[in-house]
Length: 200
Image (cartoon, rainbow, N blue to C red; front, side):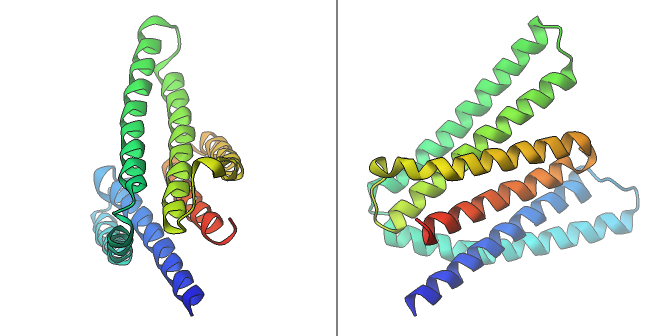
């Protein structure tokens, strides 16, 4: 019975992540950066994006609150979340600075620099997400982290392969780049969580 309950929560979380990802992408595509001048289509995308965002939040928030209530006393939780957000911010600043330096002091074009920084960002963020998933599941299963670091290798390699494929496909069809990378980002999180929860 406990296994069925855990699986149910996992698939609710997966559906919530997918809904949030789709909603965010539809909002950006239909409202922030519309790809069509047809107002009726933009309105439909706007409404559907909010439905997806709302559904995603309804599915994820209860699971997140339950998780926090059960494991907030574990000092590793706040440390893991803080490390993730700090690493994300520092990474963004470093990539921005490096990109600006390359633009100012090299002969590389803006498009080349933007593509390179985008690729590095995608790799780095996916590795950080895999590491965070590992930490959260370790806390959930009450397992040590440092002695189990070798379990990160396969998910990180898998996320890098998926990122390479998605970047290559995006360079081939740039108009689908943002949508494809959004889907890959969500799939990496879902597959990583599934791997750590049920096969590790």
